[in-house]
Structure formats: C-alpha cells, structure tokens
Length: 154
Image (cartoon, rainbow, N blue to C red; front, side):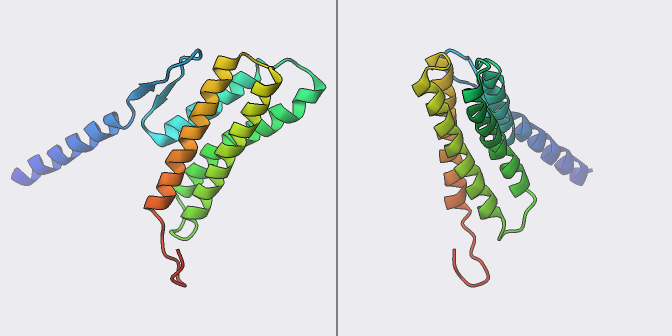
C-alpha cells in the first residue's frame, strides 16, 4: 500500500503544479488583459487579443495590409511555439526563433498602428509591451535550451 500512496502523492503534486502553471497574471493598462503563467495559454490569449483589437480598426483599404500582416504575425507566434513542442531537438530552436521573429514583427505592426493613431494608445501600448515580453521569454528559452547538433555547433 505504500507504493500506492507514493503514486497518489506524485499525482497530487502533478495536479498542483498544473494548477500553479495556469494562474492568471493581471496586466496593467487600459485593456485589463489577463495572461496565464502557462506560455501556450499566454500566446493563445495574446493572439486572440490582437485579433479582437483588429476588429476595432476602421474599415479603410489602406489599413488592410496592416490588419492582414498583424493577424498573421500574432497568430504565428503561438502556432510555431506549439509546433516546437513536438519537434526534434534539432528542429526545436528553429521553431522558437521563428516565434521570436513573429513576436517582433507583431510589435512592428502594432507600432505602425500607434504611430498612425489608428486606435487608442493604451490598448496598443499594452499589446506592444506584451509582444516585447513574449520575445524576451522566447529568447530566454532559446538560450537555456541551446542544443548541440550533430556537427557540434550550437
């Protein structure tokens, strides 16, 4: 029965850790966005927040490219991160690098929206800050998980 209790304890610890990893983090600013400490969920929430923001942009032909590129970049951050979770050790850094680039591209398009005054500053600034944080997190993942490939290069 001792082995059974040990298994139960491990399951209890796993469940507790799972709950800890999804605690909401309240972000300041005007949008009042809430992100979780689970990166997959945070990236999903970020993409959804950007898409919702795009829905507020006035329908003008000259804004179409901004909306299209921003939606592609913001959703690609999380999509590439998710894909990285089932790749080989060699492919993993490449997918994370793509996510970093897409987070930085998202920031660029948000800065264009801010510079043109298309939307209220607070909402856009909050997403810019979040894209910067996401890029930093992903860069840290790259540094901490830099794998050595078959040639010995990192």
